[in-house]
Length: 326
Image (spheres, one colour):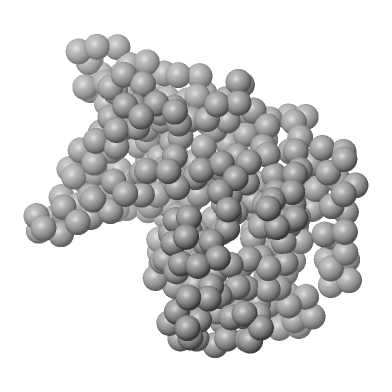
């Protein structure tokens, strides 16, 4: 490890995240309240570290129209269970236990060139508080190490310092370093906006009933502030306006509706511009791609049910009924 002007502190959160610590510390050391992290071998990382991918009923918007480039991965501590509650609409919503790690992982490319370009996640600490983390690649080559930062959800100063450190790192790496100044500034400001994790992931945030009612994301959050996991248990989920592509509109396992009418809108919004489109699973779909998606959703439901508290398993056993018929 290189000589540095002050020692690099490695928090327990780093160990909890299963991060390779060699080379995790940059030479200037992190600011107070911020931890430097690193994943040396991101290819296959989530499988190696015991995470489970959760596939929701609708696809998450991403950069590709042929495959999902955004994935949700979750890891629970051994013997821990997820609590089940009801949201404001009477649907099941979740609360994850201490020791949980949940990551939104974004990829780019296909086949052997497919590589992680962004990770944003949360670890739930022993006292129920949360630590946010973000990772980005150290170059544009597939499979390169990822550098990361972590900070306490409630520490606004640490969040600000982590964001500035992230922007400083990214400004010196491709693609930003090769951009004209104006474009680079826009790129970095976009990263700054996406790093406002606490504001976006409010706990038990209601679902939007009109565009941007509670924020950009139309889905609600669960009691842990996560958008996606509880939707795995639902048959119908609002679709999102962001991202370049949303495969939900073309997947035969999903029926898109605007109010009481089915929709084939080309611009991913309802004709009136106010009603939010919603995707509903078609359990009777027989197309091979449709059946593959339904099967992935069922596998995710089964994993969630197996890790619910006992009262939650009994209450939600019915969510597996469509899977058994399918």
